[in-house]
Length: 153
Image 1 (cartoon, helix red, strand yellow):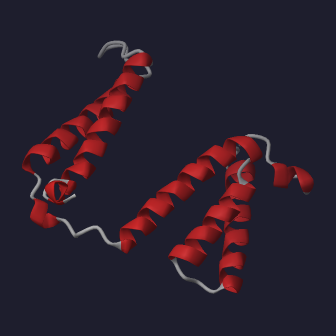
Image 2 (image 1 turned 90 degrees about the horizontal axis):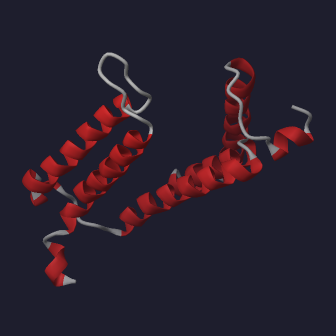
């Protein structure tokens, strides 16, 4: 592990670079078109190119002294990202309200260390409020929602 300690600061730029390259491939798959008649992938390609370039620059010139060491608090960040990944997967299966409620509850209670009563109230209000805002007010259609279906929304 000691041999890697001096190179751990490279993880972030490598992740940025990997996401940028994946986005480049995805954008090309959408068809770039031309400058006079741009295809649906042109602007995502430009954004992905900038992201990839940023990753490359950070990989080469990033100073390891700019980074804080990994601590137990770093695991909280990984937990937050894992919660977000579970939210995205559950969103496709059961809709928005329940996954949003659980994610807000996780973030408020575990990461924000809010008391249970406040966390439950804010998670319920937040998930229902966001559902009403996007589904009703803005007309953004979500996958069929198990909870909203139970209450007739």
